[in-house]
Length: 321
Image (cartoon, rainbow, N blue to C red; front, side, top):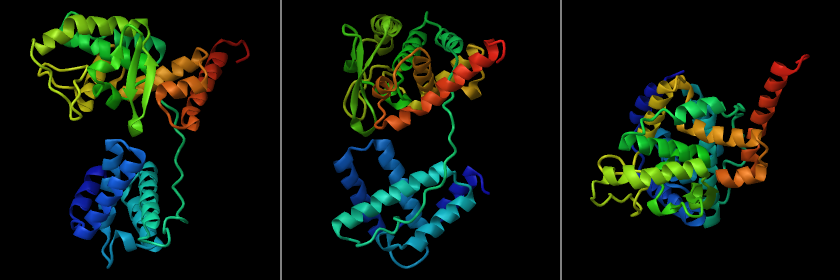
């Protein structure tokens, strides 16, 4: 089994995909974007998956002519190289969408992915922090500095609304309505949802907008994001933060709060939001809407976390637990 670095070297050593495959990939991405409005990150993942298959292929033909044995061989090769079942499941999802589009366009009459079984995925429970750990993490930034006040507002907002990290760092300045106490979030597939802010989050957002943001902007125009909108949260260069930058902030504040940074991530705040709401009686349908899940089955995994929490409480406090 190879390491991720070795796998990257192996793939980089493969020949580039040909112009026919490149055109097929871009045509597919344009079509699924027009049909479903998929997020940029999803489109890039699909592009990498298809380019990887095209570069691996060492036989005659193109992506549009590969048969089921060839696809099976590629999946088996990836498994031998150590790609995770989750990564291979995403690849198969991409291949199914690609060939379904070829069938719809009449390029192919058959779908070679129809009889390919997805790999079995381990069912892992979301890792959530305890409420006391969340309190310590939120209190970690130094709110006497503009950057610390900004970080406190970002952490409060992420936990209060269960945002994805990409949703947080790309949040436009006009997405927050403090008077009504809601934030308009654009999630996966460009789907919008309104999420309540809560009093604590509103307080820290107002403090950031009144004190920290003007100091960071230094009375100069804020640099717009790729979509032309002005970001809500900015750095000292008046730019929107990157996901990697916020990831580093969360790790740093976890260490300040006395929490193992290896056990904390931005997505862990989203999991904590969902788990704590369920523990306090929230219903799944409301949680689904706030998280922006397209399917209720995705949200249902949090019921396992809540059930485990109750079992732990029973074992700890019941005389016969």
